[in-house]
Image (cartoon, rainbow, N blue to C red; front, side, top):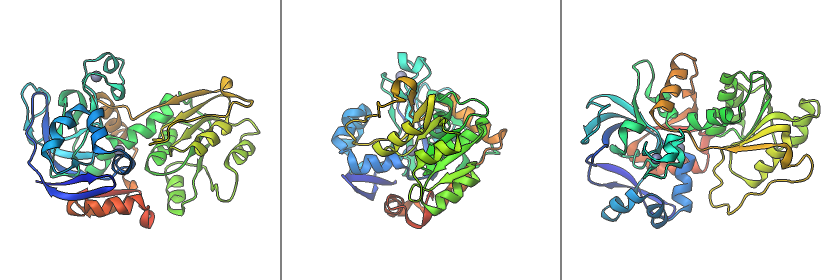
Length: 356
Ligand SMILES: [Zn+2]
Ligand SMILES: [Zn+2]
């Protein structure tokens, strides 16, 4: 089968690799839609395959026999093969799986947070292929209802869950003011999540024109362009000098984390969903009002079938439609090109719908 594989740091290419066969508890999906995500860029440009094999033990089993690491963790597919012991899936069903894979058995999975699984959980790899494997399928995958499109369903696997979680984990209340720093694909999902949650004033911070436009469409009342105005000062003046109840960091930079820290009110919450990549440490301002007066929460995208079902339900019944995030379309064979396109943020790109 054709697969987009990472052969070296910063380098992806299409390769012909064996179609995966499901082991116990696993299913194999025939891809109908996939995409490139910001996390793929971190995996590609910053983390050597040797280290990924160390972090994700199942890769250590598969990778030595492949020309490279099968890339991609956001996808939709049709069940092609079902491994021994799987009870919830039949061939032919349309299915999504969480990008973060929990074992479903360890202490952390039992707390409900599969993203910190210590029982063999890992990240999904290989959705940018004609077929991909889903480990612990009964825990991490779910059927997609007919009235949800592939594009809507794909977003539920990662960035919608992540963006919405930024708002939920901050315990955002109805009418709260929320500022979201950066309106990339995940930041836009946080904006839509804040609106869906019933926030009051939603302030987005963004400078790219296409993203400013999208931000308003997804629920922002005010967009501050940091190239024109100092965001924290502007947020203070929009909130009677108090600061917002919740400030979301959605890019993964020290500067935006600090700006979010300054923009939040005393007693408010800084909610961090940015991936700081190889940043070795993150520091926060301690000058008054200091970190003693704020709450800091962080999250990776909540995972597992119950979470996926919640995302699908808010798409179906809550009338949340994030599919306008797909600004471009490409074929699977063009995936290496899609990486460059996405990395360089060409042509106002947010998400690229990649089909076989
Ligand atoms: Zn992702
Ligand atoms: Zn686990």
